[in-house]
Every structure is written in structure tokens, then in C-alpha cells.
Image 1 (cartoon, rainbow, N blue to C red):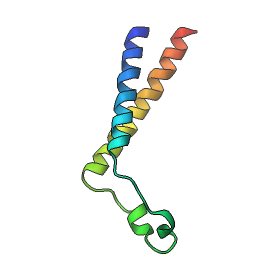
Image 2 (spheres, rainbow, N blue to C red):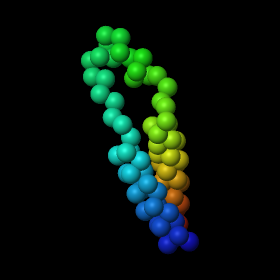
Image 3 (spheres, rainbow, N blue to C red):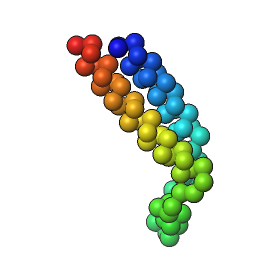
Length: 74
């Protein structure tokens, strides 16, 4: 069981790294103060929305699998 959870942990961490690196960066800077915040807080479209959902899912899987490994190792 520990080996299975460790494999899930490694795969979810790699998936999380990949999806975070593939997302487009937000370079709002001080433009968010001057009125460009609509593009910062607006809806995400296309690939960015999919990558955001995949990164949230892989982060949740990473969290649960790391807690499972820690619980089984004690």
C-alpha cells in the first residue's frame, strides 16, 4: 500500500509541476491598480482553464497521497 501511494505521490507531483509550468503567467504588476485588473480577475478561457482545473486536481491528489504515506509510515 505504501508503494502504491508513493507512486501516486510521484505521479501527482510531476503532473502538478507540469501543469503549473504550462500555465500562462500573469504579469499584471502595478497595472492591476490602474484599471487593468479586469484581465487579472477575469474569466480564464481555453487551455488556461483546463490547466487550472488539472493543477487543482493534481494538488488535491498530492495532498491526500502525502497524508496517506505519512499516516502509513508512522
